[in-house]
Image (cartoon, rainbow, N blue to C red; front, side):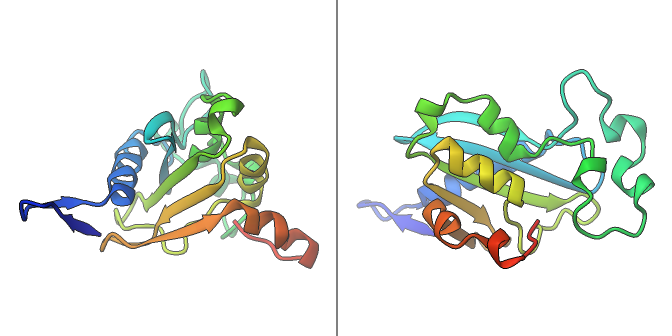
Length: 172
């Protein structure tokens, strides 16, 4: 988590450095429920950023003052993505990068609840984002899993080899 330099000073490790940047990007999110931030890094260079929010030119939920998804489906916990105005942070980051730059890159993702400012427990890319990440050529996704600088690393190859959809599992 924190590495010592040869002179005894402490500095944050590179993974949490990039996750901190993704967390800052999430502060631009416009969802009233959860905000995610994402960066794509290749060869130690940030090639793209993205946060959750309505498509360009459309009104954001924070501007409307209500969550369109919850208004249409008040009892829904997961899913219902068609009713949501937001483009996911991962999608926005991938839209802003070229595929040749994403091949072999690492995606860093942080999600926080708007009401509590707490990290989203069990945060992970939804099935749609997983499919896009697979096709983008990104090879690893790292997701912050807690305030103590913990994170989960996923090799995208595992999503290819262990296809949840073939087993009938629904993830979000």
